Image (cartoon, rainbow, N blue to C red; front, side, top):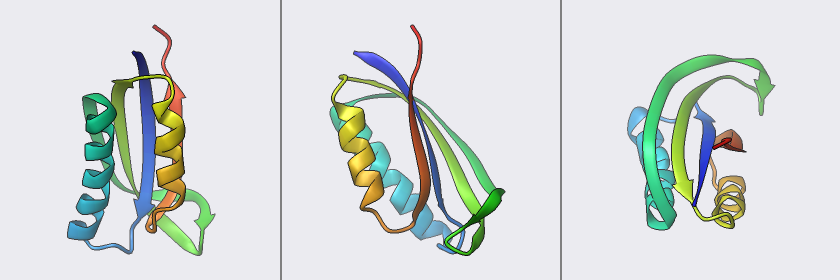
Length: 94
């Protein structure tokens, strides 16, 4: 098992219920394949540059442990999900 962090930026045009459902979807996916250590919700913030004509996004940082092959699957799901503006998955040094 390895430690990872993922930053998830979702669209600020989603209502609060839809945004929470989207983040909940990814939390349950991570829990099914590993364990979540921490979830840090940063809230709505201004983007450094417009993404898809949007200037704000909702930031969430999730720290988790999982097997080495799961981050590739998580990234694939991020890319095919509507409402996700940007993501990043980082392996943490142990």
